[in-house]
Length: 389
Image (tube, rainbow, N blue to C red):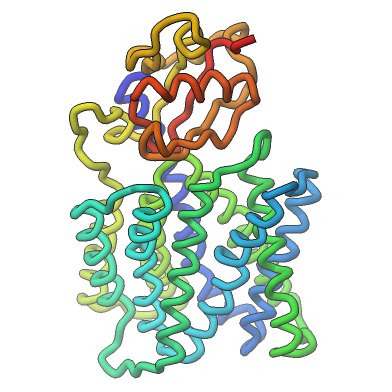
């Protein structure tokens, strides 16, 4: 596969994933214009649980074994804890302050990725995180903003929860044969079930709803949650978790632009400057580090496919770095493939790499071939030419 081909696929994945925070930016306008006031937990519940149950019915796949616990953890981090903390911060803080706290998600993601994915934060990405926070602050912050300790802590906790969920979703990947749509359904259902008792205990009975409210909830559930999170988790599986986290800076930018277009809210020169700075931070956060000797070209051009040599990995020949060679742009022919889905490796080096998808025969080939010493980047796809049978 050529560098240009990989770069195009990488950019396309980022573009599709960017739809999610842009859609999330519409949540404020929909909530204020269509939904009952003062019911944040009920809104969070209707966003998550119905969408999760529908996706479960469509995919007909349930988590098993250790994935029951993992689903609970991811569902709480990405949905169940994140939504209530987000709304708590929004209620106790001016909208601008809450927006700035949300913009620190990429910084938390860099820290979590360093620990959980062995991805050392680069100076460029740290700079991108600072630039993004400054840009968002110029867009949403006001001079008379007042701080509230509980609100600030809730905002920071929500940002940390979202960042941890993003990185752990990358680390754990998906079970064999499970697509991002099913994974989305699992997490939305788990998160919704976590929110349900909180909504009942704190807010009581559901509010009365008219046609506008029903339409608003349908939009948030279908577009703003089911579709948006599917694209988000799909993106995490294909590019680095920190790159996806930086896309979150688009959400407050989207909210400001939608407020200007749909709600008639004015944009000052300073806010327009902030939009440009935040966008620069988002783009800067997507630039991969320069290739270093011995590093995979996937690091500079996005994930690549690696074909694993049969003879060397099955003990029929010497194992060498040349045993894993970059595959050309064409897909392998059907007889060479053991299954339709490629293997996916999560790890920054062969020693820490974990095969997170692939059938047992392919895993055997990959496990042996990882001893070649070739560096593996998170999200890299491995294609086994033959099994060891």
